Length: 428
Image (cartoon, rainbow, N blue to C red; front, side, top):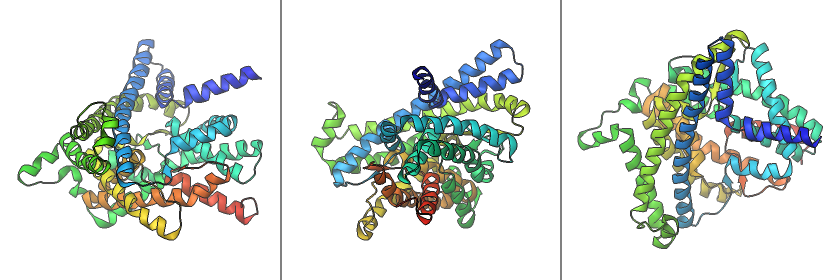
């Protein structure tokens, strides 16, 4: 029994939770099904994984820079409260329910393949870490309702399997507008916010007024280069946070770098990370999409890979940065509201606000240009603050504290299930 558990733990936490391995495995299967030569299978698989890892390296660099900003912002403005970060909640949940979470994730992914095979929802969710987060959220939810391990695994797996196929499909009409084709889907459990962003954009603006086509006068034209625009715009945020935190706090993070130089270097590091993300995305997409034809033709007709949110960044990098700024400001504006109405104070964490807010802006930009990008990211910034505040009591019910899930799909799904449980006397 211990051997089986060890193997299961290895498969879930060492393989399937690694998105690069998962997309590489899918590429390999697709190439084999197309009866490609061994050299082509090996080359396509390796390049898919390497491309994904390159974009992961960029993500890590961007996240590292954002973590420094978050530290300075919190210290500078003396803000304390709940930090919405899926990785933190999942880490806490895994210490309490490790095997249940593993089973929900593995069985849920298997069911995702079955749902894609027999229904009209053809998305195969390849963002492994997000399936892990959803498995953790469902486990927390059912445990808060007093369910047994067996019920949690069965119900959680069914919900995850359907969610993995259905949620990406919700945003697919707008994903087609972004990419210009129907080859990939968005595999990030904020699809309700992304679909809403696409709809809002269509109501307030025009796609031809894209953030990528803005005509800027005179010297402002340097902002048309997104590396420059990222560095300068994010640099302003860093300097505000650094000045608010003070020289002593900055020097604790800077490792000997002058406290007024450090924010500029962090802004450059963030811009470099974003550039690497876009480069890696382009590389692995050029491999995974053709390889997926094999799976679509032989096993799951008309299926498409649902991939992590940075896959849309190359289509509108300026909108990505604009979305982060607008959504983060919206999250900050929610803080006094939470304090006034007695809700848990949700501190906007820069990392999810960049990835979620930036992606929402790309969706809004695709249908409404820069106006759509601004409005959609502001609305999304509010949603990923309000959702965790409403769901936080469920976290506390199983002994978790200090953090919550920012993802809109998690919170919408969780609130519906939990309130149904209360209606039938299962939740308190």
